[in-house]
Length: 332
Image 1: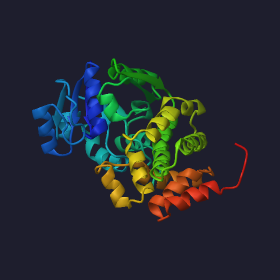
Image 2 (image 1 turned 60 degrees about the horizontal axis):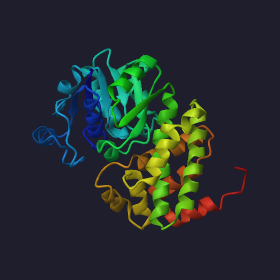
Image 3 (image 1 turned 90 degrees about the horizontal axis):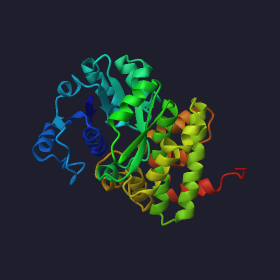
Image 4 (image 1 turned 45 degrees about the vertical axis):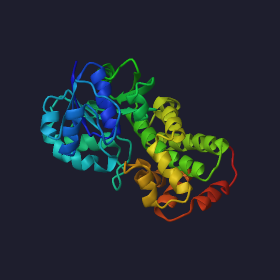
């Protein structure tokens, strides 16, 4: 048994609190709002983000970050990617010097173009061998309902990866280890952008051929960018690459796909946000950084550019699709 702090009580953070508790660990779940922490304590349910799912007795909710982190062997960060730096600046002095730092957020920071593991290492001063990431085809509601799934724990230190693997292994979640932190993070961040594109296509009433094309060509984009950044190409054929991409692009439970579907059906950006019930669709903001990363490294990312144009430049979904279909012909 280890002590786990889950910093962020959204749907994914709450689900992972359940997973680690079911794995036999003591879990402190930090919620930003004291009233949410109190509600979880009183009812054993997160009414705002994971209604109907009972949390194990081993999960303790708190709004006090010191209380959550002071004994944590594993500190898990489940906050939106664009708030990671600000939160970590506050939390860094509270972390144990030997704690394993685990990111489950999928995004690229605006401006710096840094991955979450890089931000964690920079802000906390931790060596890269202490920082791990969790990624895979992990729709939170399905895992909370204990539907069989798998995930990947990536860390440069194999022993730390195995520590996290053992802590989150349950009868319904099978974790694998991987040394390719870069590939797992790039796969996790970029698949959200491709899921927006798939949602836009679905919102336009387009069918499975279109979705399959976007997923397949989206995987090609992800792989090109990952390789340019030093990732292992084998990662993109695995759970943190293709697996995560298919789940996020195909499921109505995906916030990014839902957001894109609303845009495809003619909704405004504000209306699309309402369709995701106020939860963050990471791909909207990450499309900016990922498009810029592609330009910096000379990597062609046509789907990402199309999504960026719709979300940030006022291009219509119809025009974005036409631009993609009108690109010059070439060998696959």
